[in-house]
Image (cartoon, rainbow, N blue to C red; front, side, top):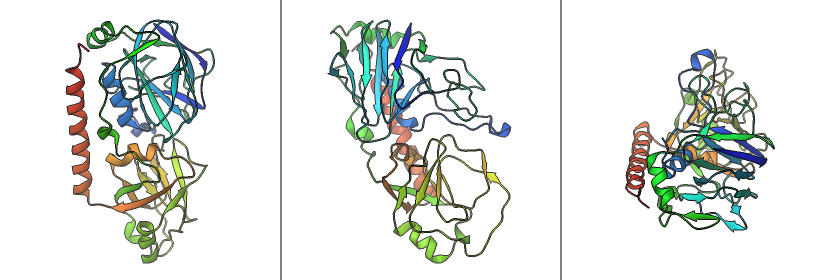
Length: 331
């Protein structure tokens, strides 16, 4: 069972939920920029939430399927067509052998996710199948997909095989049910991101601390999977401060000496030597992942308790979604 890449799109990589447990070796976690969308896509095809799928950035690839396979597309508004018909998103879809899926430019959002029943079968490196573009490891030969690549697919779960057996239309067939739009209503353009204070917040001058929450920042074209570089009001320290590099995580907002914050993303380094003014809460990381260069973002302070509450609510919603999808096993 396999898929052939006819054209790769702007940046299409194999991603799972990241390389957990190797940061002590200096290996970044990486993984899907928008883990929520990847998890939901995997649920829709009967996979484990952390199975490997495709992350498609800005433009979609063209893919030929060599067998009937259940797929799901989630995340940003990336139109994907098969034989001229638009495939539904956030829904289980059976595509037929020989079908060619073609993507165009992204509407809202930056990244879409394609999960296939059985998952993308590539070797696991340090416990993950994610592509680490900086290190050149994981995923498909440690790099973005290219024309002519052939992706192997794992064995579908009994749930997926049962659903596939109930779908028969040509050239594809979508389940009559889908993920409720309420589940992903938190995605928005030019978002306000909720943050908690960083360990060095108090070292910034008063005016900068106020501007950080009051004014907006532009996401520059120099942004990538490693971090978003922001411009806007300068954020300055009360006085020069030198620090030893220390641990950082996805969502950490560092401020280098030029006063322009950097919001660290999935492929961030494991340590950083710039003062940390804030951290985006976990529940808002999928929102950040869908922000395009040129969009504007604001920051809103919340407490650690509020951050935990939002995290628990999101996880509870995903658990309920998983239970609901499993109950649809017979179509």
